[in-house]
Length: 143
Image 1 (cartoon, helix red, strand yellow):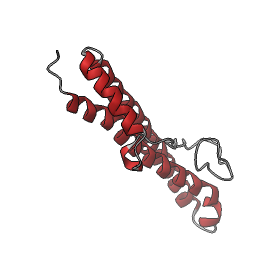
Image 2 (image 1 turned 90 degrees about the vertical axis):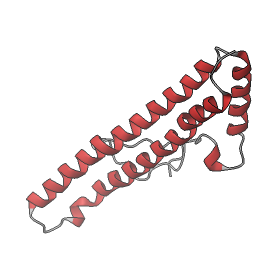
Image 3 (image 1 turned 45 degrees about the vertical axis):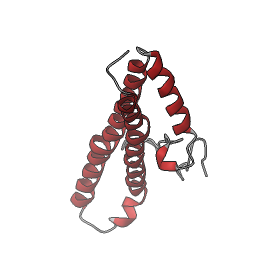
Image 4 (image 1 turned 60 degrees about the vertical axis):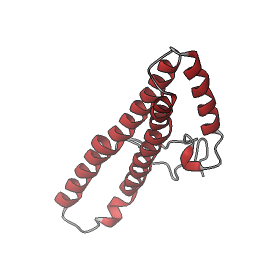
């Protein structure tokens, strides 16, 4: 029998599989919206000093790549690691393993959206990525 309590494993798994993925999704959405801004920059900065346009593009690209994309990426990877750690620890104790499996099943089937892992985590685009006409609302959903 392990000194690890199932409540601790549940919280660790939920932090990784649910919370960190939800945060990653927010960075992804922000990256998508900032990336969309690049499409209309020429009309927004029409008549402005070219130095301003260039400075804005550098700032937007750096923020998009160094903050939004990297934060998205780190949240996804950290979340996956936390969830996998909880599962790995549970396998060292058969009671905890079965309990965690039940918790994961219940969580994934929860009626409350914020309680279950997101079914889709939008990826934050990098500044050099192509600008599609419209971004997907979910996996495979291009309008």
